[in-house]
Length: 325
Image (cartoon, rainbow, N blue to C red):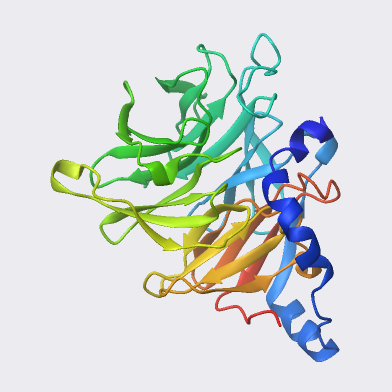
């Protein structure tokens, strides 16, 4: 299992090895200052597949995470207590035909205003792959099927339009589907979304009249404006050189982003001009960060330990974060 999990991080890990070993030491005073603003709130069990892949937030600060390899959705309270809400059915073949990965993957998750959760499940089988829904107190059910050869990964919800957007990292597409469920419609298959060896379009967020996306293989952040009737405009590359980029969040300061770089084991701040700076590393407790959520001046960062294989966790840190030297 550990070898199969590590494949998620391999695209960024090779290019990042030299950079990680070359990080300059941080002065003791700076370390102490950062420690007061950054802490790990929960540690997860790697042996049980508790590798947090994506995150949504409840109004009280409780985090809702997907455990990629455990086929689970769970909550993590502000005090660090973990509670499993649902375990998805295992595919008959154990997930070995899941594209690119070889294990069933529970991925992107979003929450609507009434507490309904939507999340993605990829199994390599037609009976389970797709968009799933969990209402408060209910049981999970699939509300939209996706092709067996797809890898649904990032997820964004537009409550105004009543539409969900799904990133397919294997086929390099974004689908749209009504929040009530139904047949997904290909929304964009722009070249900028395609993979170039492993995983293409990955994280998704809606921001300022556009759908923003990352591409792990290409190390890019993209902006696709919504056109008439919600159709996609031309994809625009807003940032480059982001090896191993996974999911991300806007900080609330214009187009500024905090992004998870999985293999390189970093959180970076991406400015409105596309420039980036490292704000968190393994020295702060990161273990292959996969996604970011921001609320009330606090960043919530799940780490899946795909290649570090040490300590999957949930880290919280204040925003703005000082840049690493």
